[in-house]
Image (cartoon, rainbow, N blue to C red):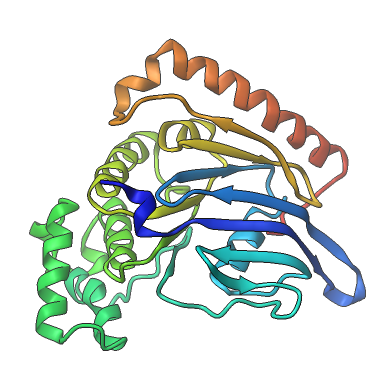
Length: 278
């Protein structure tokens, strides 16, 4: 599968964002530039509050930028003349906190988007939803409600719900943050299996160094606020990846390298007394 031919390249060019809560300028992003090829898993690391989620929200269209430009393929999402992108199914977001409808089964949650958008008839949407849930290992719990399944199952269903809309880019904001290490490891392998089946660009924010290295083709390290791109590290580990790569020498060396870069920014944030912002 040639993922690049399917679209989903993200271009972030000289993006800055200044918040103004209570009249005090807060510089979240400064002159951020990043090119993400179509079909790449791009992991973004940085100190808490440095602006990672601010950047993701700008791509999603949840808030405006102060300057710069963001493009998806040849489409301008936002720029100086149009500061806020229009939200759309070409960019789907999975947040830290669960967003499934608790009164709908997993099947109905997944089928909801195509039905509401009138992209598929209800019967076809449910058939496609069941097929995709099965691919994610959730066929046996498709008729259960979110409160009746584990957090890992619910989170897998959320990712399937995003992917059924055929987005060009999947925006993940620390989706596994609250999970224990073992569950998180299993979720990582599951995400890579889904990624192997579904051509999509993934823009993934995390605080977890090992998560970033295990999943990503590149790790983007952001500075403390005002955030810009400090370093981009290529993760030269072959796919498919499973938990065995975690004990390899190559993985250990990458952890050491990434940790040194991120730690330096965390120390700066700590010295400056930064509080988590976005």
